[in-house]
Length: 72
Figure 1 (cartoon, one colour):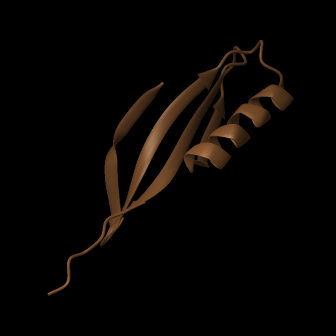
Figure 2 (tube, rainbow, N blue to C red; figure 1 turned 60 degrees about the vertical axis):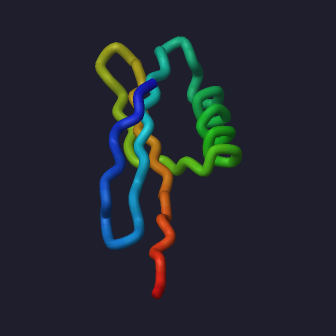
């Protein structure tokens, strides 16, 4: 599991990315339940899923970080 740096999309909004890998031993239902848990409790959403030739699932999750802009 590794987190990538924040990428600004537009002013005041940034995304934090998290990469997670699941081995082929995990069933589709188990992976779904684990990702739902992360979404509900951590505020993550699914960005990308890559299933490799050996059956490993590589998932990229993201969550929005809104920075407050100071007003005068």
